[in-house]
Amino acid sequence: MTAANEQLQQEITERQHAEDELEQYCGRIEQRIEEQSIELATVNNKFQRQTAECQRLEQCLVQLQTKLDNVNSIISKQLELKEARLKVAQSSTLAPVSPVFTNN
Image (cartoon, rainbow, N blue to C red):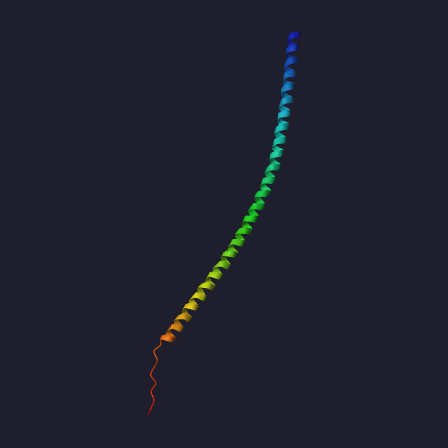
């Protein structure tokens, strides 16, 4: 019976040791989870800031494209006007001179 008691005592000691190791392991896992949660929150905040910056830059790009389109339109109209003026100037200098009739 003494041997059985010693055997049970040894098993109890081993079990307590295993439970202590398991508790320490769980504590380390909880600590890692907390650290990774903080890291994830930090990365998520950075991602949200970058997303907001991208949206702002996209809006700026749309505005700049609109302005560029307006400038191109103005330049195109100015070129058309210049060509029209050039045609008018050329036609007036090349127009045949009509003879002047005088009564004598």
